[in-house]
Amino acid sequence: MGHEIASHTCTHPDLRHISSIKLREELYLSKEKLESIIEDEVVGFAYPYSLCTDEIIEEVRKIYDYARGGTIHKDSFNLHTRDKYRISSIGVKKAMTLPLKFVHKNMGSALIVIMMHDISIDILLAFIYYLKVMLKPRFVTMKEISNIIADKWKYVL
Image (spheres, rainbow, N blue to C red):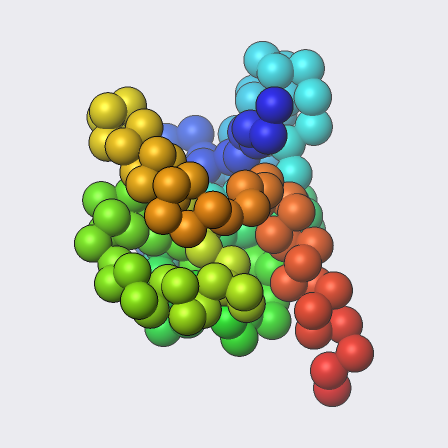
């Protein structure tokens, strides 16, 4: 139905402040637990607190097909994102305050990733309605976005 389950660790630690052994444990156990519940493969990861380092990204790369955080770099709309392990996203509350003119201007090339973390269903439904009526976007899964990013930059040196 267009929904995708991604991993977010087991205990939601700041990954920058745990050992490499604990990091691998958080990444693997979360994936294994989710896969046993949904009986399907989990291919995506979301960095807790949107915080990561190059070393964390390298560990995530070994286990998952892509990863995202909040605004983990200044390219919130992923217009120039080249790495499918550095996909930025914005929260629903913040997304609802985006200047409509800017979003319309960039809609053709923007890959806007909306993060749904601790929000009410009412806010989410209002935002989806706003998007559908005002912008008529194409909704895709994170896996599809990661493939778009990988394909977009495949031939760029």
